[in-house]
Length: 596
Ligand SMILES: Cc1cc2nc3c(=O)[nH]c(=O)nc-3n(C[C@H](O)[C@H](O)[C@H](O)COP(=O)(O)OP(=O)(O)OC[C@H]3O[C@@H](n4cnc5c(N)ncnc54)[C@H](O)[C@@H]3O)c2cc1C
Image 1 (tube, rainbow, N blue to C red):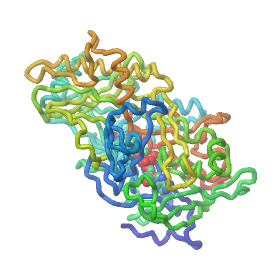
Image 2: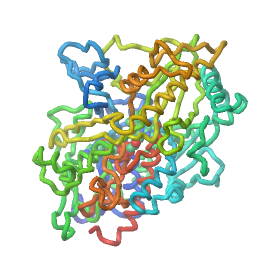
Image 3: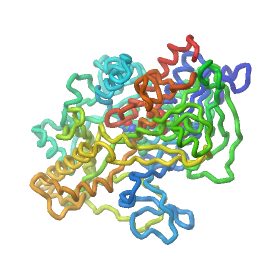
């Protein structure tokens, strides 16, 4: 455990140049960079430095268990892996016939709550967004520093590439963010059969497969966002495959004796303001937090007797909020910045009317198409597939696909007690689609109480907006996956398609409305973004300006996955590390200018 750096605490106790709340890819990067510029920084995280990461599981030591809604109506009850709390206090997962007296919690949605945030529990896929995601920010704000070319420079600045020859265009080799892409030496069935069928669907030959699986999807290429087919899959790992997260960057910064103080087990509860600190608007002056372990109710180890010790810290310059897409809007609202109706309903004094806080939430929707091979096989080929469907919103590729033995149906607590929960038969194989560029921006994070230890209500309101495009692309890809399975012949095949279930598939592989109902019930996600978004001057829903400043106050910025007006690409983590870097750069540019 690192000890606070002696330089960090200056004359006044608990007073720093900057205070950063949350140590994920956004906050961990911004805090480390500010400290590396020799400013004193306090980094608060509600979690600690436990290392219980067993790959794929979500251990209590490092995870917050959120339970979310996909819909506000009865469609919510159709998901087959709903989580319930039994009378005895255990988790029970399933849809039908829960134990008598069990209470429906919702759809399990884990988040990393530890030093390193969700970059400690995520799947580490490192996939740059489309250029148009950056151009969108330029278009709405006029800030050219968000141009795709400049954001590529930001990526090159942070990246420490471990898989390409040094000097490869568009990549960085001297940054902190470790990336790696394994190149397959051999591909075996059943993955080989699935990939060969996929390659053929793009008009490619089986002999090209190994080369395609080694193709860098993050290469700088003007046609990248149109390119479809099979690619390699980079991850944020070291050259030996070990996870690299913002925790590593934070600990390196501390070990190098930069003035970064890491305060773990510290749940921020409110941002403190001097209401006339910037003459006409309030100025953030510090943070109130509860010191103690497992204080948030999403922490599976929470106990009502955990009250914590109320503590304050002062920021001489600025406070940076990086709690992630659920907790950043919660903390803004607890601090009086948010939709006036919600705050007044909970008697929270309104500091700034900001109706966009907790709105605009987006997620990349996933769903597997499940086939059953005649014999079980473990041969996995890795890599990924990109498609462009007729429903592409921005005339760019719009669906990402992974395929592997076994089936990924989303998340549920591993310590659940339903012994009858269906398991997949031998030979099951999932072709999992991830819908990128979702058009639905109707997700919300709303306060349920003014108690900072409570979880907010999280509702993705799926398919409420842009249904034709989002659902159209997902249905189109399910039909494509059925065609892939149908193309696999002996000896690897034939493959029986189990899901989505269908009595009568049409010639194209579609099951029409039945597919639509299945997708609507069984889709899931884990990339929430955009709940405190950057937007144009004059847009009432723009919580931030293009320099991450919270509108209506001085001395407060948001730097995390909440800031994106549009969810970036198919996997948000690399974009969030980039935002951490960009955030630190603009804060340092502004450091001499005063915060008002
Ligand atoms: C299971 C899973 C798999 C994923 N897989 C991928 C993937 O393969 N590729 C990809 O690109 N993305 C993936 N993601 C998403 C990605 O990890 C996130 O988008 C990213 O980590 C968001 O970074 P962030 O800084 O916004 O917030 P987070 O990483 O969520 O970090 C927020 C931090 O803030 C702390 N915090 C919150 N509230 C408070 C408070 N009040 N006081 C103090 N501390 C607080 C939390 O403890 C946490 O450490 C995955 C996410 C999950 C959960």
